[in-house]
Length: 325
Image (cartoon, rainbow, N blue to C red; front, side, top):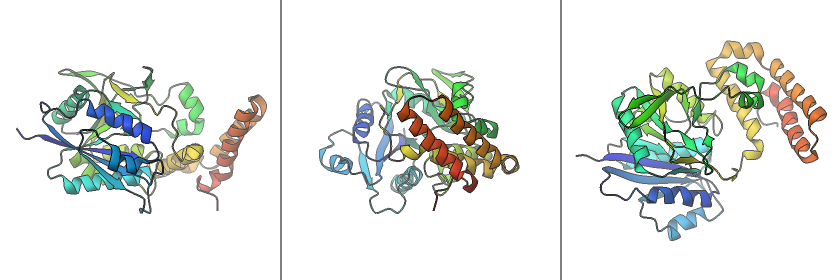
C-alpha cells in the first residue's frame, strides 16, 4: 500500500526552545514503521540569531528527516513568506506529495491518533481542504483553534469587547466520523493544520504581500471558501498550542499589525460596508478607548502601554494603519 506523503512545515524565528519542544513531540511517535506515512520536516528559519541554525545543523539528534531552509538572505522573512517558501520547496522535492502539515513552534502533537483522525476526515470529504484540531495550553485550558469569518461590526467594537463576549468563538457542531469527532469551521489557524496539497496548490498559498503576519490564515480560508473548499477540526485533548509567554519579534506592534490586516480584509471582501464606516467611526472608537484609559486605568505602567497603543492607532487610522513615514 502506497504510503501517505506529508511535508511538515515549520516557520521559526528566535524560538529555539519552543522549536526543540515541538520536534521532541513528533519524535515520540513519528519514527514508527507501523505508521504508513512518509514525512519530511521543512524548517524555514527567518534569520534567527539565537543559535537555531547551528543547533539544527550540528546538535539535533532526533530520529526525524529534517531539512533546514536558511532565510538570512531572503528579502521577505515574514511568517507568510516563510511558509510559502518552505511549502514550495517541499512540493518540488517530494513527488506525489499528499499533505502539508503546518506545525508552528508553539505546537505539540503528542500522538499519531490526532493525525490519523484528521487524515480520515480529509479522505472522506472531497470538499474538505484542511483539518485542524481543538488545542489546549500546557495547563489544560482551551486555546483558540480558529474563528468564524470576521464581521466588520466586531472589528468596530474592538478586540476587548469581542474577547469579553466571545463573539469570535467557533460555533462547533460535532459529528461522528468513525472514532473522530469533527466540526466544520470557517477559519482554522495554522496551529497546527493538515492541508491537502491539491487545495494548497489551487489557493496559491498565503498572501504574503498584504498579510505578512496577522490574518494571513483568515484571508487564506476566505479564498479557499470562495473556491469551493471547506475546513474544520477534530476534537482532541493531546494537541498543544502554547507559546509559554515567548513573544515574537513583532509582538510590540501586534495591535497595529492586526488593524492593518483586518482593514485590508474588509476592504477586499466587504468594500461597501467598509467605506461607510472607515475611517471616521474607527477614529471615534480609538478616541473613546483613549479617554477610557485616561479616566479608568490606574496602574502607571499599564496606562502608559495602553496609551501608546491607542495613540498609535488613532494617528494611523486615516492612513489605513500603514506605517508612518
